[in-house]
Every structure is written in structure tokens, then in C-alpha cells.
Length: 303
Image (cartoon, rainbow, N blue to C red):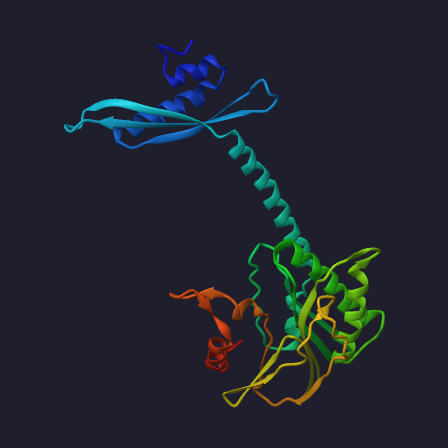
């Protein structure tokens, strides 16, 4: 049935759309004209209750004088590849929807702007992120934090929901006001939520949390620092060197630091996503060593 017919006539024998056949013929003749290759995927039903996908490639071969000698055609079975790509499309669609859910828990930037001049740079590595930021206002006091949950992608994003909820419960249910009190209770809540019967998840988060009331800042940190830029120099407040979660045996209370604020002070909170970013000609980490002078250099600019 095939001998004596070109691929386009064969399409019509299969009952394919004639317009599709003509479009492919047009692409094919154009490829010969410009001496280039052309390819497409042809899909058809099979006896295995699944579509069969064939990658059809055509390459015109010319002699030394430029005369067309032959057309080299190669067919490859790409059914498994196409099915995998279709599954990936579904997975990516789910990821995009998960991103919408994660974005819904992040603060409304219009409300955060009431706090003052600020900027937020949030660039997930895998669509969704294990990093998050948090802000609440009670009376004339502002509470804000930057958190880094263990893992990347979906696993990290799921933890951000748990940790974000724990922070909100500390405020709404337990009426906590100090950053150290919030971190202590947050640890208790997260450990409880990550243990269900015989299943225990050894995950958690690093976090820096600040409370500002009038001209006083109170800071607590779990493995994350606060940088204060003042008079073109950075003061670093490291907080406690243990995280929140079950992947540490340290359950000491978190400490806090009281800092009187001055006009033109600039505060930086960040996760290790920026300092651990690989790049440059030698593919090295960006590091605090590079971030510190950058923070100082841009400190006078509008945030």
C-alpha cells in the first residue's frame, strides 16, 4: 500500500486531514528548496489502545554540483517520549497551580507597604519554593519574618504552608508578642504537626523574625541572621545557631536582641538561597563575602 506513494498521499489513505497533508507537503518542498531538513511527529491509533507516535525526519542530499540526489527519510518510534512529555505537561500544570496556592499565603504587598519603604526579591528555583516571607500588624506594631524550609520544590513548599500557619497561630490563638516567644511556640507547633502516629518527619525551617514598635526593633533568629546597615557599615545579628524542627536535638529557648533604631537604618533579611547561589566563571557560591559589600553599596538607594 505504501510503494509508489509519497508520505502525503499515505496520510490521505490513513484518513488524515487533507489540509494537514498539504501543509506538510509545503514544508517538505520548502526544505528541499532551501536545502534544509524537516521533521514532524505523526500520530495514529494502534492495536494497543494507545496512540502510536512516529518522528518523521527528511533530509535532502545534494551532489557536488548542487543537484538533488535523494531524500533521506528516517522514522523513529517516539511513543514513550511523547507520553512522558504529556505527563510532564500535567505535572507542570499542577506545579503552576501549587504556586498560586503558595502565593496566596504570602502577604499582600499593598498592606506591607504601609510598614515603610521596602523591597522583596522572591525567585523560586523550582516554580514553588521552600522560602517564604511573612508579615503581620497588630495595633502600631509590625511583625515580619523570612523563612527557609528544608527541601526544594514541592516538599519545601508544603512545609512553608505548615510553618506559615504556625506563625499565624502564634499571633491569633496564643497572642504572643515577642519574637523569641513566637519562635519557641512555633517550634512546638511544627514538631507536633510533623509527627503523626508512627510517622515522624525530620524537617523544619530556619527563620529570622523581627518586631518593630516605634523606634525599637526586637530580633530573634533560628539559623538566620539580621543585617543592620548604619553609617555605611553592616552590623550582623546571628540569632541562635539551631533551627526549628526535628532534625536537631537542641530544644533550648530562643534568645532575642533589642536594637534602638535610627533614621536611615536599613534592615536586610535573607535566606541562604542568595548566598549559596552558584555562578560566575568558576561556578562558585555567591557567599556572604560578596553579598555584604553589595548590600553596603546599594544601601543609600531607594529600596
